[in-house]
Image 1 (cartoon, rainbow, N blue to C red):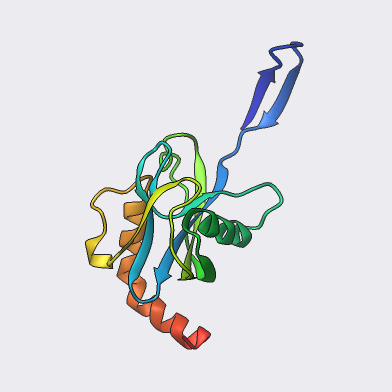
Image 2 (image 1 turned 30 degrees about the horizontal axis):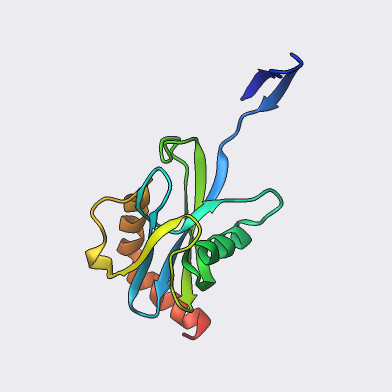
Length: 158
């Protein structure tokens, strides 16, 4: 969609495309203990998957690794791309499209950057309310998790 904008200082009119913003979210499996979630420090608050915006010139995979490190302190190995979610209402701040990765986390987990707290949850004990559409993402992941992990273990010889 093309939008027209006027410079508030000089009045020059420009046209640009208004597009959804790409983001990544990471489902981090941590040492057979469970899934890593962060409690967001900034609105919208609540428990969420680690993730964030893709920087200009950055690949989705690099963004996922960077965001995981920034928010959890963990080094992650991406095991695969899970799914892409694009509901325009998924983020109350703006229209985003997220690509979700599954990763194996290593290191000492700690809340950092945009994370107020970090916790590792057993899949059956996830918080009842999560930020964004992360409840949907995790419910869909948990339906296929056993098969996913079997395939990953064979491929990566974990």
